[in-house]
Image 1 (tube, protein in one colour):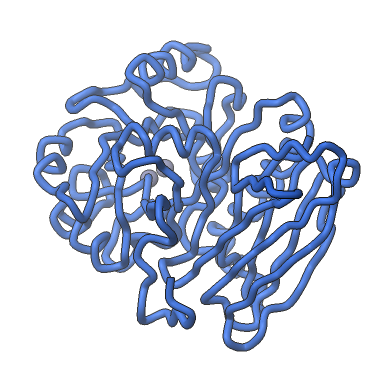
Image 2 (tube, rainbow, N blue to C red):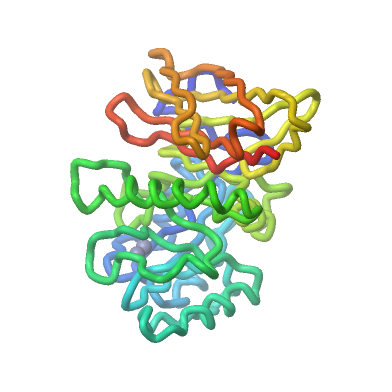
Length: 330
Ligand SMILES: [Zn+2]
Ligand SMILES: [Zn+2]
């Protein structure tokens, strides 16, 4: 990885075994999409992404065009944005041509049947932009049955009221995490651009740990929460918990044996940003990055103090630059 990752020089893969991808993109096959699949794929390559999941609104018609666009540099996974009457959800990892029904609302109590159709083919169901403030955009289904929450959708700005929903989605996800981690099963967070127009791809995107660069391994990494969200490929985050000779990364569990734990964080690309360490007690530690935007940080804790640790990296004005899924301590 490069020491000085400037915004002009995307860091391609964050580290060996980590893949940058956008799991929510639209082309001309979706209402409001202005780009051809070829243009979206070219944009994904240009901003340093390793994979995209195509998620057109309630159609599989784009799958055939998208299938021609994957190669050794860019993996293409099939998906759909299931636009229902009371919220949108993403089906990731569909079979080519597979269509998921979206013609219902929460009062029909049928969503489980459609989630099952995705799970049958090994796919993931994502609650999309849960607090989008436009008609039918707010997600009102229970999270039960959904695998993942899209806590970060599009640019993280709070000055535009219709984009302030990321902060609310993150707060709700963070609130549920403590109880869910304690029960041994929690819902990972991801972030996606929801690209409709030129210049939107990859802002933000999800960086996933996978054993190999295949769709199944990428989906397994997301399912396990082995992922973090980056504002762009100029931002780099590494986060591990270490005890004795043992180490756990994002999404993993560390058996501490009651010993003190060191949280190690490496950040590039966020000048004068703030790194905060979150546990079930809220913000447990906070530190400011130098003007170079790069630093190696350590913070000491234990399983007695923290059931999990997750990281947020924010710009000086409060906008999010990166956020991680938790590492669990037992
Ligand atoms: Zn949507
Ligand atoms: Zn969308």
